[in-house]
Image 1 (cartoon, rainbow, N blue to C red):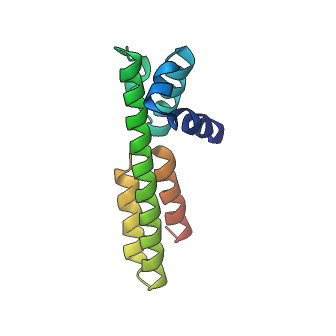
Image 2: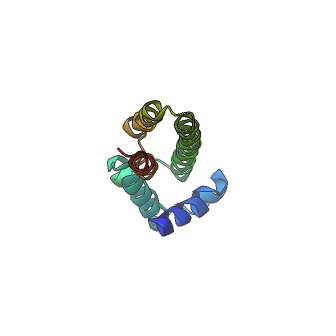
Length: 121
């Protein structure tokens, strides 16, 4: 999974024009694989893109969503740790459970689960 994430970040870190210029089978497969493994959803896997520009917009939208959830995970982990440090372990666990239950990204939710397990749940 790490190699897939690395390839995705390299690809999705380009400008819209650069992504559109690489609109080919390899990039569509990368998008579909990352979408499926990251979100557990096969929705756009077989999508027919109207244009290279539409594809580039979807790539950038997906990367933006991933970044937002990554920041949310970081905030949640910090809040949970602060709560645990203050002796509020149950509240800390609830923070992690709430994140796990709402986060669409499998690998981010898995990190919350690991932290939850580390707290003894």
